[in-house]
Image (cartoon, rainbow, N blue to C red):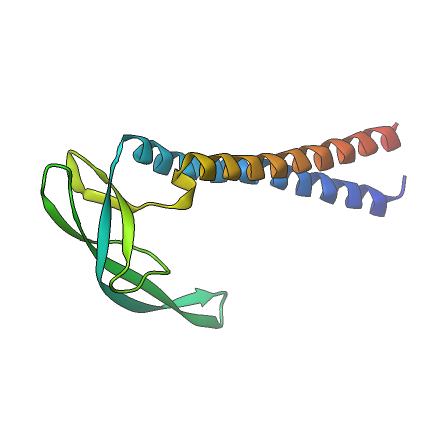
Length: 153
């Protein structure tokens, strides 16, 4: 068999494995957020201020870029009447906006802005999307492996 053809199929197999494993990594990282979202209480928070920070990001040996990070200060009231002000990372917020905040009822300083993925519909859609990517990765990896085995024999 041609060695170039083997390299193509081996590369396709690696690509399939990447497509198969990437959703698992994403789901593992999101698991902590979902666990927090299921035990957290929610409140409507008012964005009272937005602090912007520019950071220099190194890309390789010579390339460098400036990235802007936004940190809104939000103010919300817990179910037991405590007022909490907290700075949270977020991209698209403006002063005066109201946003849903998830917080730990035992420690309201442990708060996060709610994301669409925290809703049941958002979780389902994200799971379905990642499942499709995994299925695609499985098909690509299995097809490449099968072709490699059949052509080697």
